[in-house]
Image (cartoon, rainbow, N blue to C red; front, side, top):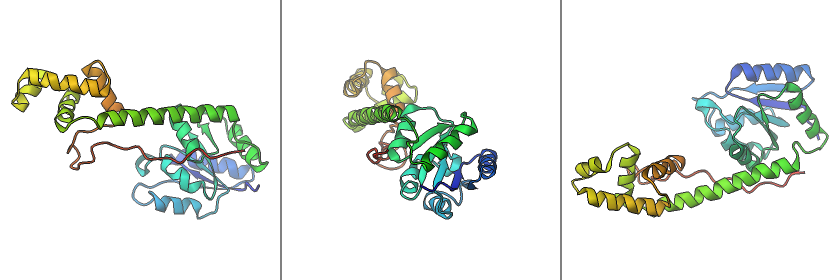
Length: 242
């Protein structure tokens, strides 16, 4: 296939421009798209990236104020091959990028020659990464997604009052202070805390608080709405690759 036109999408201007210079020097028609938080988010950024009909998009996952590069992969990959080039080494996040449609994920710490080798492999119709490594990372992502859903289902079991108590614990308040602020007895609050721990399937208040932060949970009304569970975006099923 043709791999001639390359778009480099990164919020670090120096990195993006240096990558373009290197690619042009090697004979590629390369350009950089540096996201601007005010003008290049969502559909606007997609439009800018695809304006040059790139064969390959080198995409950073962390685009600063412009948002999460992970959200762009699904739409970009319908028109171009997406190679993620990132400083993020989280295997779950890498697996999510692959599930969304990226052909491979490369570290920014890799030498330029490795990125060029990836482009050559794509041009020659070869897999951009080893099948075993791809499956390992996708498996990590699937496991994390399943666990994330299970955890969120536990929080959904909390009553409004139990959610309020958990929010108080997250704010660092002790049972005695929660009771005083709520005008109820300490024994009542302890009963509520016990119920929270039971529903979340944890053994301590500290673990419950940690789980709440990990699940990006918020108490009812804490953001001015009733949508107090922060839902992770659904990603498509992993695509079949060569």
